[in-house]
Image 1: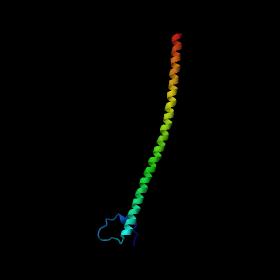
Image 2 (image 1 turned 90 degrees about the vertical axis):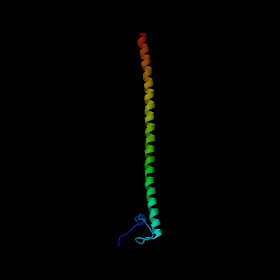
Image 3 (image 1 turned 120 degrees about the vertical axis):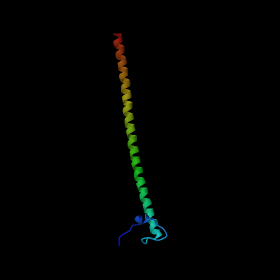
Image 4 (image 1 turned 135 degrees about the horizontal axis):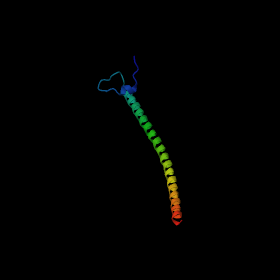
Amino acid sequence: MSFRGYRQASRVDWGKEESKGCTLEQINTGAFLRIADATEKMAERHTELIRQRDYLDGEVKRLRAIREHLERSNASLRGHLKRAKKVVSNA
């Protein structure tokens, strides 16, 4: 005699005749277990999305800091070039 789990029994297309000797309570138990499994799968994906969002938020902050540094550096270099051109034109 083989073991038949509630999850597997709940997937059977049930009609008026009771097949394999499962009661309605056992079928409902299997259905609840399948619902719980599906909910856990959805939660796994949700936590993965949260992890990706946190990583990307950190990456955005890092890249913005680099951009701001480069903007200040470019402004400084433009100032030096402007002064150098002024010195050359006065000489």
